[in-house]
Length: 67
Image (cartoon, rainbow, N blue to C red; front, top):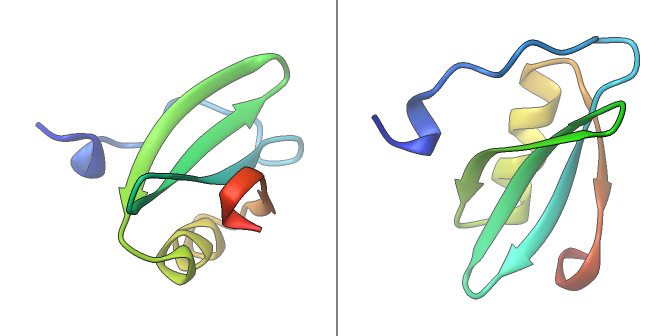
């Protein structure tokens, strides 16, 4: 099972958010909840990461090369 097929880890929908960063040619979506970080998805475009966050009703923050 690849990272893109796994369900999201347990999280609090009220405090969790997605951090979007760029690594090489991929955009990484990391679920942050309290002090835990879970890499959850990688996409070819920033827009795909933004759609992923919206589909899961999570806010997102752009960091590093994704800005």
